[in-house]
Length: 112
Image 1 (cartoon, rainbow, N blue to C red):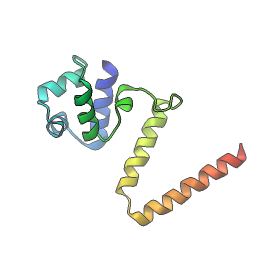
Image 2 (image 1 turned 135 degrees about the vertical axis):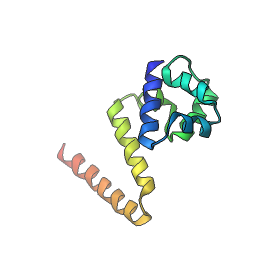
Image 3 (image 1 turned 90 degrees about the vertical axis):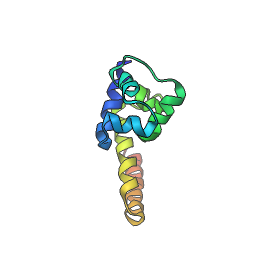
Image 4 (image 1 turned 30 degrees about the horizontal axis):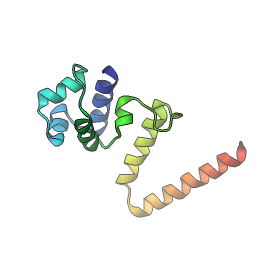
C-alpha cells in the first residue's frame, strides 16, 4: 500500500518525527512500523488507529481517502495544517483567527 507509506512519511516529517519516534509512541517495533512505511505490509485497524493518534490525523487522510467525498488531497492537507496551527495559538489569537475565517466565508458566500 504505497499511498499509506507515502502519507506516513509525509505526516511524520511535518511533525518532525522519525520513524523510530512514531513507532515508539504507537507501541510498535521500529521494524514493524518500517514495513508500513515501505508498503510491504498493512496495519490492522487497531494499529492504524494508534498510528493516527500519534500522527494527529485520521485513517482516511493516511489512506488518501477524502473525508466527505468532495475534498481533494490538497484541501485535506490544508485543513489539517490549519487545525495544527490552531492548536499552537493562544485562545485570544484563536478567537481572532476564527472571526477572520468566518468573515472570509461570509464574504465568499456573498460574492458567488
